[in-house]
Amino acid sequence: MNHSGDPLRAVRLAKLDQLKTLGINPYPYSFARTHEAAELEKRHAGLTAGAETDELVRVAGRIRAIRNSGMFIDLHDASGKIQIFCHRDFLTAEGLTVVRLLDIGDLIGIGGLIRRTPRGALTVNAAAVVVLAKTLRPLPEKFHGLADVELRHRQRYLDLIMNPESRETLRRRSRVVTAMRRHLVERGYLEVETPMLHTIPGGASAKPFVTHHNALDTDLFLRIAPELHLKRLLVGGLADKVFEINRCFRNEGLSPRHNPEFTSLELYEAYVDYTAMMRLTEELIAVVSESVLGTRRVAYGGVGIDLSPPWPRRSMAELVSAATGIDFLALAGAEEARGAAASLGVQLTGSESWGQALEAAFAARVEDTLIEPIHVTGFPRDISPLAKADRADPRLAERFESYIYGWEITNAFSELTDPQDQRARFEAQMQARAAGDEEAQPLDEDYVTALEYGLPPCGGLGIGVDRLVMLLTDSPSIRDVIAFPTLRPR
Image 1 (cartoon, rainbow, N blue to C red):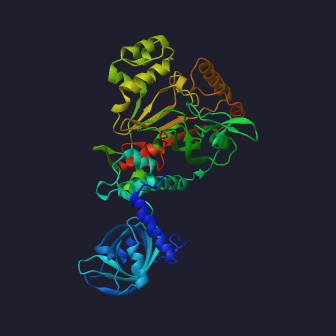
Image 2: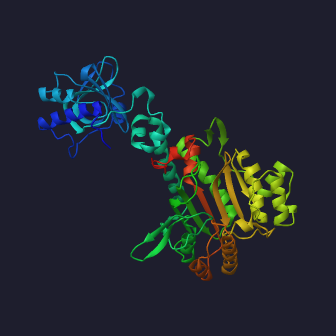
Image 3: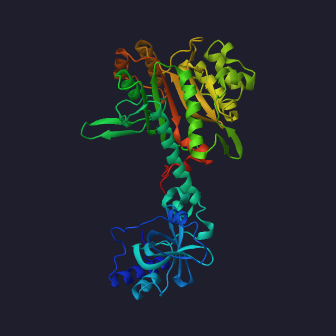
């Protein structure tokens, strides 16, 4: 990119040359600071207006405002803001020269005594000014901040400099993940890591990304889910409770709730079924909300939502029947189910199974109405190839998804542990794949072998971390809660 015609950049480059002429390295190796801005504010909260101290401090940060020809500088660090006073009473001639070569956006270090001005601003009387990074481009115009959403996501570093809300969202994300991890570790879960590169894409119904390993001369898939590897660890007896917080990749469309790479928490616990996963989901999300926000009541898009357990449990067919008057459980087979779904205006391909037709009706007529937290149970077995059959109705699986604000937040099963049943389900998926379903799961021979060595009865749970963070930060788009979301190349 050629910037030779940019006059503002030319001015900054000239100042850069002047600094070098003075023998100053504008990009030094380090700066030993003693305090952050917020720490000093707290430490000197009782310092009265006009009071001086004999405390020498060293602070560092980015210049966000320059007033009175450089006499006053607003210096921002990660914790907050502090005022810098640059005056010949405290600075050498060289120091004053350096001040004249500063611009908004420059990173500087300051050494000096701390005081409170008569107007009440905590201030450092600069006795030393060190340039830590001379910036060559001006920041976006202050008052409009960075309003261009596309630019905010594309140049996240600018967004973070200009918008404290963006910084708080991503910091809160970090606290959400920390709280999840802490809650699980305290309950005896072992954190593990499983491969990102898979020879067979499995563990979910999704289209994978394909890559090539040169040394092995073989295609590999970016993982769509860690499920099958985590359950192998349960077979091996590594622990009775395991979890992983990490990335998954799905080669699908972008939307306010979908990014091709996303973060999930996935966990498995031996000797329990999916009802234990319901209790864990409610408890985990409520605890995380309380830990991060100080409350279990959140507001999203102006709507108040109470995350306190217990959450209601309703079956998919029951919810569809309540919304439409059609009871899919009373329909004989796939053709009747497709006809019923079509009568509701649902778009179908014409090859849907009974379960796919029920799911399509649920997605079209029920999903967005589920604002308060709810566990939706009774998922069709034919769309749940890794879940145990429902004890009362073999057409269904012991599977639930938890919904909040009309979004799926979690997905959980009583995990299928019968190797012969698992093979049959995989084979049915392979037939669907051969018939054109790109998201059907391929047969993972080694996973079936692992099951033949014995997987204890277990419950499994996956939580979409990005969507949970959206909810807990009142963020309208998944791109707001991912530091560097996937964007179309310019």
